[in-house]
Image 1 (tube, rainbow, N blue to C red):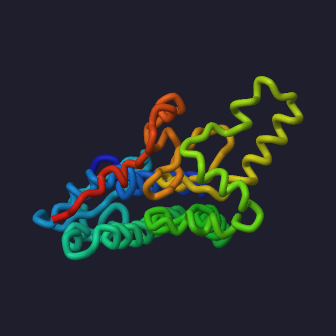
Image 2: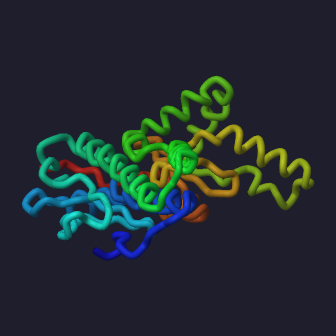
Length: 252
């Protein structure tokens, strides 16, 4: 299977974590920005299908590996069979939960295969645990958690943020005219205000040097690069809808 990892074996904690992040990013794409394509490929009329995430941040819906035992742990089998038997959001949440379990099994498979000791396993888990799960990203729970953490200290900033559709961080816009000390202070303040905001596509945290845009339908925030929107293009969008909201339609 292309990109499946048969010839790629990360051997250090950092390499395994990088592998985990790449596979995770690919699966998040399938369940968010590429959800329409993922839905179409998960045809219940086909045989048992699995959702694979690759270290290259790509995803694929395909049949399970033929070799027994497989080179890597296999994802949940037959995700396509449940597609039409439940609400789409519930089906996506179910796939997300199984995807989280698969990512952990692959990461700790590498850990066992290459002899990670107790300290290595703990460090790997702590690195993974700093990221929101795929389930949290897909259901919006990660965003809610971020809001709860910052609701007291950042109430005013969250209010102003919800009134603007797209933003280039203030520090970035004004760097040319600001003294160095003041410029650094603004970067730190911007990070503190919005540091708990998570991208609805990749699940990564806000950074002051990146362009973000908010979906007017689901109110999730996205990196411009994740949804292919530039600051110049955002200026001409009256009401932005993310790929997931744009693709929503009545299902048979």
